[in-house]
Image (cartoon, rainbow, N blue to C red):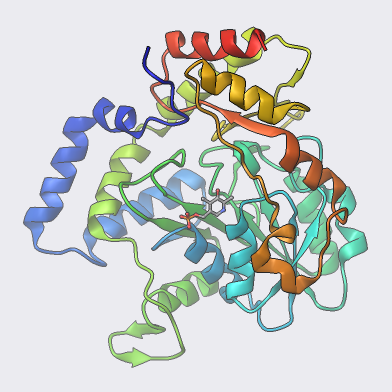
Length: 364
Ligand SMILES: *Cc1c(COP(=O)(O)O)cnc(C)c1O
C-alpha cells in the first residue's frame, strides 16, 4: 500500500494545472521577471483579500518578519515578546532586525496567551509578535488592547494562518504589520520561496518597499542599508492563481479536520481544540500524546508518516544558547515539544487516506 505522506504538494498543483501553466508561460513570454505588473497585481489582490491597505511582496516569510521588525523600529537591544512554541523563524526575524526575542508560554490552543504578556514587559519592550500557530487565530482583541495600553507595536506572524479570521478581520490585518510566507507547503503556497507583508500604514509600506530593494525607492538612489528580497513575477502570477481558489482550499482543510475530529477516538490522544470565537484553517492538524514517539513509530509501521512541529523550542536551540535560557524555563512550551505530533493534512487528501490514518491512530 502507498505510504501516506505528511504533505502532497503535487495534488495542489494538478488540481489547477492548466491555470498554473498558463500563468507561468505568460510570464516567461513577457520578458519581465522581477518587480513588474504581475507582482503589482498580486499585491493588490492580496491586500484586498486580507483587508489591508497595502501588501508588499518579498523573498520569504523570514524576510517578511525581518522587514516588518525593521519598519516597526526594532533595533539593537529592543525586546519583542513572542510565544515560546513557534517555528524558529519568528524569533530569527526579531534577531535579524537587531532585537531580542522574549519568550512567553502559550495557551492551551498553542497561541500567544494575553494573560502572560504583562509580566515580561520592560522598558526595552518595543513590540509583541503573535504567531497564529498551526492556523488557529490568537486572542487578538486582548493582545491588541494590551499593546495599545503599553504603546507597543503588534506584529502578526501569519505564515500558517492565511485566511483565518480573528473576529471580523482576517489575520494579518489586526496588528500594525502582518507577515506571510508562501513557502510551498503553506496554505497559500507558491512554487519556490515567497513572502509578503501587509499593513494599513503608508509609512511602513514605503519603508518595506525601500528595504526590500537595496534601500532604494528610486533606482540607484540608496537611502539606507537594505536587502534584496523580492517576490518574482512567476511566483506572483502563480500565487494569484492559488489566491483565486483560497476559499475552496481553506474549506477542504476544514472538512478534512472535521473528519479527523469526528473519527479519531483514542483516550491516549488529545485532538486540537478550537477556542470559542477563534478560526482555524488547519495549516497543521496537531495531536498530542504522552507516548508520542511510540505513536509515531506505530503509525510509520502502518504506512503513515508524521512530523513534529517543533521538537526543539527556540529558547532551547543551540542558535539561541546566548540568551541563557535553560530547560525548565518554559515548562508548557517544553511539554508541547515533547508531545505534539502533526498527522497528514494537505489539500487533496482523500477520505480513504484519512481513513487509514484514523484507523492506525485508533488502534494504538
Ligand atoms: C514557515 C514559517 C515562517 C518562515 O517562512 P519562510 O518562507 O520559510 O521563511 C515563519 N513563521 C512561521 C510560523 C512559519 O511557519
